[in-house]
Image (cartoon, rainbow, N blue to C red; front, side, top):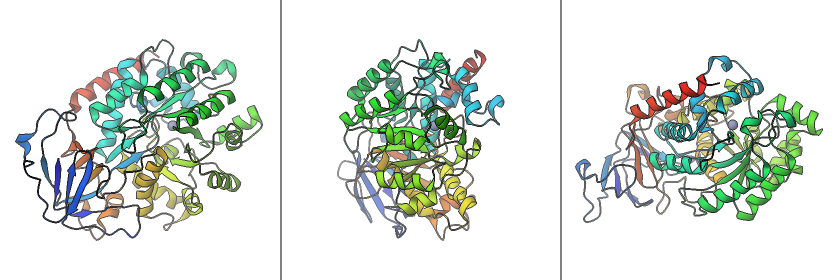
Length: 472
Ligand SMILES: [Zn+2]
């Protein structure tokens, strides 16, 4: 049980442009739900507690009641990250590809990534989710498509273990690559699987891990990597398999001009046309990036209900282009936000990504291109729609208790509090939440992960990164 006292400014639905903040209210969280919002709330009988009452290590176990002073904080629904590659934490900022565009960047890094092992997956997943939680994100996916030859462990199981250690609500994708260089694809043989292996494991992870509950901590998505690393048959079979279980679909699309050229050269068609023919469009489908769509293709997205996961930092980092988010939103296309993999961002700073989204559209379309409320919609409601969580994204009674608190009574926000919500995007020098609550549990407190030794985790990640990079 958690009682947030005296919130400075609570936004029940920051995606709503007319949302006005509630001032001085309290929020009572019981189990994994928001149970009451009002003034002068107290903990129910027998629920009184303080820091010394904390029982058991966080996260997990039965947490004793806690009262949190929110009088310095903007309180918002937790953010939702809709595209990532956690393992790339271990290959951030490598000088050889700091200035490379996507295809040469991939070709170089595949040779490093083929060295990832169980420990690398477990540790990198914790680091990435830790960064996300510390910057206000409460629900994330991951797109793991790299299964090095000889990797025998349950990869998604390791990622769920990492999510449990952090306390993150997690909906990973079962990614895949089946076309290696010898088949005309981009990756080397050592990191691709056969289509039989991929489909069998896709079915296994759905049956083992997918929970359709609107407040699930575990959901599964299927996600062939891209049109240049899988075959038509795999894409079609994956789409059919996902739909037979009512799980979502995801892939990379329209990220670069090189991808357009590859698809035209190899298949004689543009990427979205291929997706239409390969049954990979629809309300259950989202594409990471979606930069190079034509006007006609935007209409296809609109008609089919296909969504786009916008990754502004990665698009800038790799020089891929500026997605037409403003025009997509005007057409009613669902657009969410994502940090993308840690080797092309190279941070999992979610609030920072929101600031990038606000500014990048303005580079293309001018100062009125996108509002703070629209960025919050990308970061909350739209992401949840794509990941299929219907009872998250608002701070309302009986909704899921995923919230982020940001202390705005600090030097860097001085003078910016005429609009406390937008201050999170326009001002600030570090994007860390004061407190992040996921599924009714405190995952970040006073800017630190709860129940995780950040120093130890950092050292481990650096050790593994050095090993992986040296055995290239
Ligand atoms: Zn990606």
